[in-house]
Amino acid sequence: MRIDKFLWSIRYFKTRNIASTACKKGHVKINGNTAKPGKEVFPMDEIVVRKNQIDYKLTVLDIPPSRVGAKLVDIYRKDTTPKEAFEHNELLQYSKDYYRKKGIGRPTKKDRRDIDDYLEGPSNTNDDQTAEPNIKSKETED
Image (tube, rainbow, N blue to C red; front, side, top):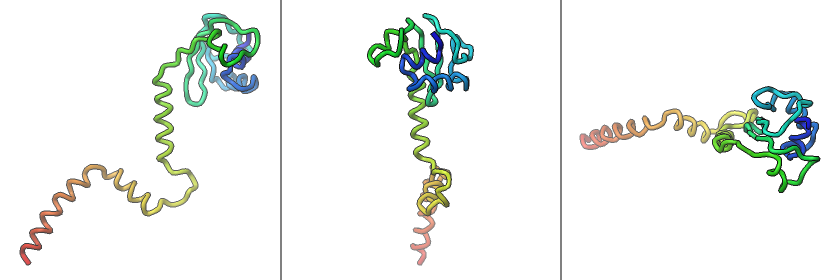
């Protein structure tokens, strides 16, 4: 079975056209080699699919006769994707939430203060502690 048809039939891609486009872009590898859409897949092949910034690793167990239901997918493939890949994706989501969107304009006063606090970090607390005794000494002189 062709790799694009296999990935479509085990529901990694919604359409076969999207699966073949991913193969053409080099997002699919079979046994470490970049695969064209027409490359044949055999049982025990190891496939790496790059989708949504995650490298999914699969092992082909059997070839499905046609597109299968979601509950039957595990009969035809074994997912060996490491959990670190998903954790890395979650960290990317958190980092994207912090950054301002391009074209939003100048930072507001609050944004500027947040940026300054972030860049200065813990050194700010030491300056505050040294400044307080000087103020008290001036008050006692008066």
